[in-house]
Length: 516
View 1 (cartoon, rainbow, N blue to C red):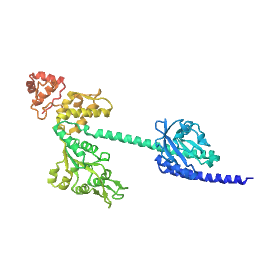
View 2: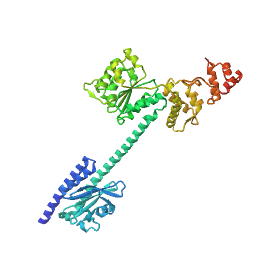
View 3: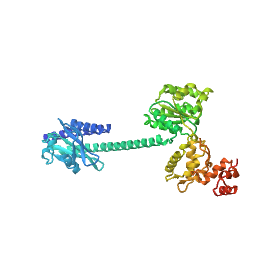
View 4: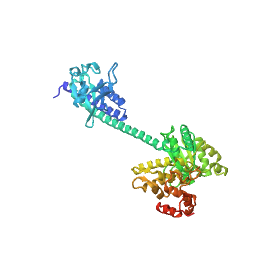
């Protein structure tokens, strides 16, 4: 039969169990609310004080090097203390718990031989409970608590409660560190991608040193600083999209999206949906709401290629967005506001289109705030060697092998008209690289790629000097044949040869004779 004393003791334990359960419940809620460890751990210690009377407590967590522990949360300590307190493994009672990786329970803290009196974080005359905080199999910190003097009779229970709390804390610490690591990895990946994108679309990828290209570079550098609307003008294949990307990725909007759309690729009804988006059920097949390119580019840049191809009716809708920054999705009534920089491009003569009434004059002036004309490749032949070698390096990266191009191959490229501009040159280089077994792009690989061999005077040149040491024998013969209208007898006279001699060279040099 239990004595009244035993009954009182049982009632006290029941009350303690209720407090312990309430503490665990509240701690679990606190830990589930946030992964900000300092604030969360401080709240955990406050709950343990309110529910169980742990009026002094702290949490330490391992530093990244694993050699030291740093103070992460402190409760119930009055006066000034160093917020940057650290413990080595084995240092003081806190370091001892970390070293042993098991609980340390003391009836009186002052009895511990390694108690660091000078830190004055705990009361030396009352009990002490220290338990390791584990994340999986690893000890990542220490939870240290001081129960009241009245708890001396149940210190094992207090230690067991502390272990349960430490287990909950350990799970949160592991999750918080994992999230922090993933965020760091994502940030590093993001920064690396930004550097890669800037490198891929930066000024270094726009090759050229002719005066006209230098003027383009200067315009791009200046306009990139502002939100001005840009109209890039030039023939197909001159690199209008590359210029637009360089403007965006060197502008204050570089961290925002770069969205592009070829206006000539879609009929008018699809173009409106593509640019402005549509609501669910707006038309047959609109099974869900869809954002348009303007919304997707919010905070960034929208590149509208072939802007001269849009219809007069659609021009009015586009003008409103450019003027007001407002639009409605197809089938919608709600007005949406967007903050988008527009860069447009065209190969058309927009002035002639305005004069003919096919392009709105007000839209033309809205787009033509900062025009950037791109010269065709035939007007900057001096850049062809540099562009060719740049493209060879690009193709080498794509093919995963070293590639080189000979001077003879470059000379063949110099004398082509390039109606397809840089895009045609890039295709030629890639085809020639495919035909090269040893990684050297020579004259033969360029000719196999579809380029016709010519040795005509460069633009602005006075004529061919057949004794020019830059020309090899093959090029001198071809130059003479071209100047002679591919009549071999005339070409022979230009070179001081007999018809028989030039016919022999045409055969041995494998020159393809053209019929004119």
